[in-house]
Image 1 (cartoon, one colour):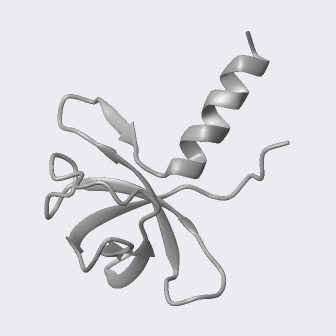
Image 2 (cartoon, helix red, strand yellow):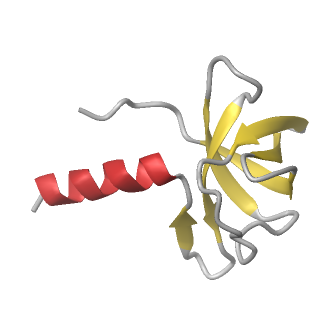
Image 3 (cartoon, helix red, strand yellow):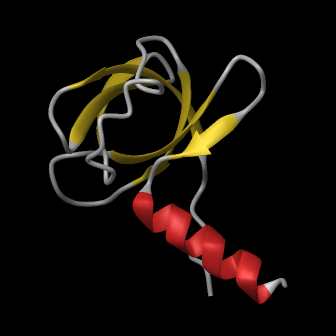
Amino acid sequence: MLLKLPIIECTFIKRLNRFVGVIEVNGKLKKALITNTGRLEEFMIKGRRAFCIPKQGGKTDFVLIGFLEKEGKGAIIDTRTQAKAFERAVDLG
């Protein structure tokens, strides 16, 4: 069973290190956990439209889960979300 958390639109600002990025949510700068430690330079561009989910505890307020590109295409970057999406796709056949 998938845990249903609200997906929140945000704007990517910058990556602080392998695991933490800065995003803007409702006009406020917040820290977001990045579970994918890859370079992701093609996605992590200042001002890019992104999506996150709320997180409780730790040093960050959100988990960055994906980006949307100008052409309407996007990418899930959160490794846990990728795995859950794949499992769900298999379950649905």
